[in-house]
Length: 247
Image (cartoon, rainbow, N blue to C red):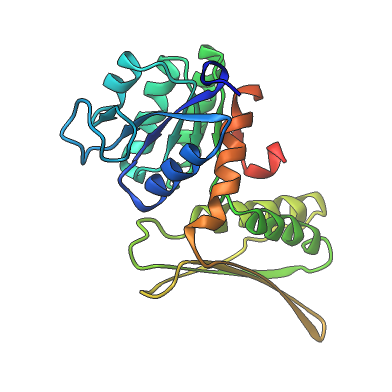
């Protein structure tokens, strides 16, 4: 495959844990090209810190100076919405791994994706096992009327509850609503050093319990899903939430 037909990717939050892992994964894939690394930690202008050739401190400057097909955002909750809107203004598709977007944020983003005819994929979790966990929880909700979620993450994670737990809760409650059950699923958040990313979905019934658990032991677990999202996001329409929608 020649460079001319590779998907040109910019990673926003490139100096963070997930951002730097994404840069490595993009560079390792023959169908992708790491066109720009973006992070407020950069002084600005060209550089070679990540071996990209173009490192930027400002997203808008990067999009004005570099030809980009897809932006991957792994920044922080405080900046992710503004970053998405900047990308949509430039009609660049976005893959979002940053959590913390509210329902109102998603509604606004959805509206702008339609106006700009540019897709956005928001995935609270890119691990294939996590996607299956949510699917299994949705199936289990048809047979159990009591559920609680425990999510456990490292102490540097900025948001609580996690985006994965909130999406899992939504999937369970949607299933219950279909069955005429009006209940909320409690979420318990744990933040401790030594943890990575873990979640348990616990169901209780008459004389039995069911536990569905997923553990990400390293950030490598997220990279196949990130790469897949980058390759497929431009075929989507509007705002899509959840990696399961492109599998």
